Length: 303
Image (cartoon, rainbow, N blue to C red):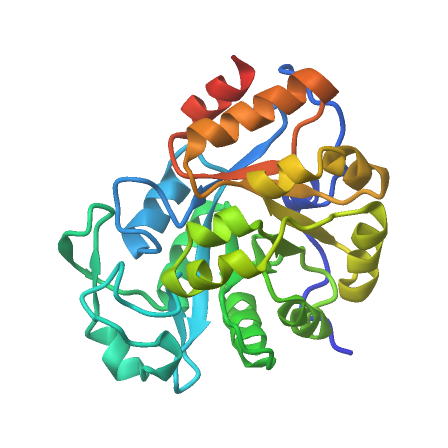
């Protein structure tokens, strides 16, 4: 088994591998939390080069993006499995498009208006990550369980961005296992989602949401995830799954597992849930993936 990376930067170790603890306002950042821009900074097309570059220049600790494999193996930055919602191309499965076709796609802004900005490839975003000194969280959106997406993602990241400045997450555990075969050191995040969040996602996920229930994230499951994927790894959980598992922060802290939270309903509800848990249990997550301004989000949690 070959390891692409040997050491993390000191900052990345603190960011991604520290166990949860009781946070105080005296700690650096947002009460100890690291904040990532969800699909890049607001005010720009989601998952766009401009959104990621703005996030890396701004007050966030990093940016979160989504990637999928094109028909010829190149890595496109795109969330939905079908192109309609955020691009000029209607009703096409991303995995069926070749590189040349993806180059012709233009993005819509967050109000749905067409822009002149090209839909990016993963490689387009990496120079800005290199310059920024911040962290890029790459979520693999593939439904298929081959190692192609993991292999392509790891090779592109490894060749362009220093170790410790990128992380990979996925809803499919098999993708994380494929990454771990290539890289023994990097932080990996397992994305757990509730049926409410699925209903708010792309149309394909929404159509199947009624078939699922809130995940039961027990201490036994957390330990099993660590064993199957290997450390360092953490859990990325939506606020509805968090509500269904109120002991999650404490259970994860007990085994030294980082937890990042997110919401598809926006920052207000997300911050309210974290504020409630802080008051009731004295705990916050390792970090949060947010849609808006980091200072505003932090103020809402602390209020």
